[in-house]
Image (cartoon, rainbow, N blue to C red; front, side):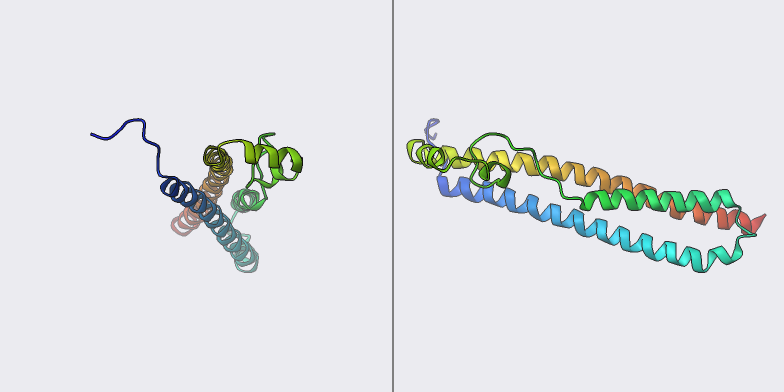
Length: 169
C-alpha cells in the first residue's frame, strides 16, 4: 500500500490541469464555430425564403410566414449571443492566467506573494479557478447554442409541416 500523505507529482498535476484548460478552450472555439454555421444556414434559408417562397405568398398564409421567419430570427439571435464575448468577473484573487485579475494586480504585491508562498499550490489554485471560470462561460455558450438549434429545427419542421399540409389539402 502507498503512503496516503504523499503529494501528487507536480508534472502530472500540471499536465492534467493544463490539459483540462486546453480542452475547455477548444470547446469554446467549437461552440463559436457551430454558432457561425447556424448563422450561415439561417442567412441562406432566409435568402432562399424571400427569393423562392415569397413568390408563392398566396399559398402560404402570412401567419405561417411570420412564424417561420420569427423562429429563424430568434434562432439567429441565440446563435449570435453565443459569439458575444463573455468573461468571468474579476475574482479579486491573485491570478497569473486570467487577464481580468492580472490587469488590476499590484506588481509589488504580486511578486511578494509569488515568492513567499508555495508556488505549486498557488499555481494549482490559479489554474483551477480559471478552469472553473471557463466552465461557467462554456455552459452559458452551449445552453444558448442548444436553444438556437431547437428554434432552427422548429422553423424547418414548421416549414415542412406547412408545405405538407398545403400539398395534401
